[in-house]
Image 1 (cartoon, rainbow, N blue to C red):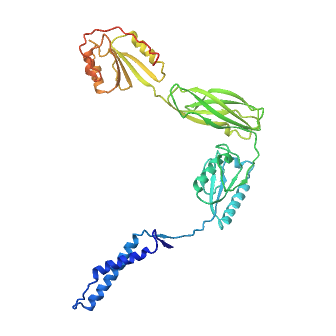
Image 2 (image 1 turned 135 degrees about the vertical axis):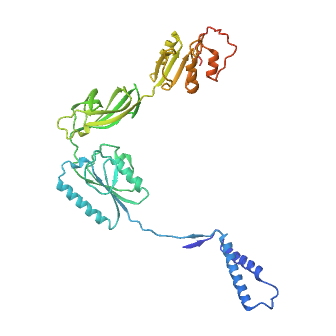
Image 3 (image 1 turned 60 degrees about the vertical axis):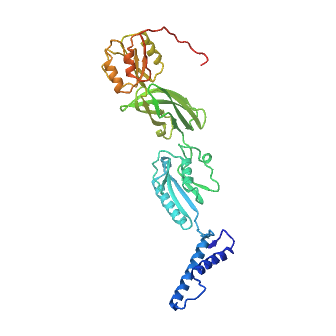
Length: 419
């Protein structure tokens, strides 16, 4: 430990000089008082000495000194041991082999702990703490495992990553391409049967998790095959409702390479709102090692976001049909037409009100006026010869029409091509 100043060392003399001048100014006198006792003189000298050191220290602190200390911490290299816990590890693996492997790994960890810091994990599609060999995971994602290790210990000195795995992955990216591990050696312990068996599987499904009612949405399925060159299968899209499975679409697939990768696309309509359960399945091929990965389920939430529009009029008119026809182009609009004399419902279920020539003369629009005053509903007023302009001025405050004598002008629209 050492003390370092921001100024030259001879500034310390100035600190002592400042303390001496301050103490001398307070306690030095030109003439000695005769009646001063010996005790008073000792006390005065003691106080002057204390003030000298106190002021010198305060001035010393003004020089911005800082303490430099050096500590040496010896950190043992970190070794990460990760055990694959996916179900594929059980292929050609006997129970006695499993017990023997667990004992050997526990002995290895104890031996390494004498020289290294050991962190043990087990994994499927995610990394979990602790050494455990109980293969029950349905997925293996080696890229996510290595990514998790680097996120946790990226700022540490990693001596090595030891992975005990069969190397069979069915999720994520290629770990070699996904992560660059500079100066971090990765050791693999081959387990299980690393020979690729005859198998077809659905590796991924891409679909929007949220769609809107009556939308046609697309589903993309990625399919991989091993040792299935020349084989054919059927891909089926189904929906599961009330415990019953209904087939929506089928596609035929032929594998021409080994291994082969296919992408297939389904399109279906969101007919009912709510959360819907879908399934894509592949027919098994002869000699396939497992058909558990031939099926993938997914869920799609169908939202009914249609705007409910009420067209309310005092009497029938051709314009009403024209307005409805124009609005029906947008499938997100739900349109109801009601005559004011027959309307006994409420405005609350509707998002927009189109008041065609309402309030109208002599139509008994008092109820409508009261509803519009109490409920601030988005309203489109269309005025005409039947409209009661005085009542219109009362029901809204955006536009005020005065000096109206019921006269109307015939007008037509012209499209501005430069708009």
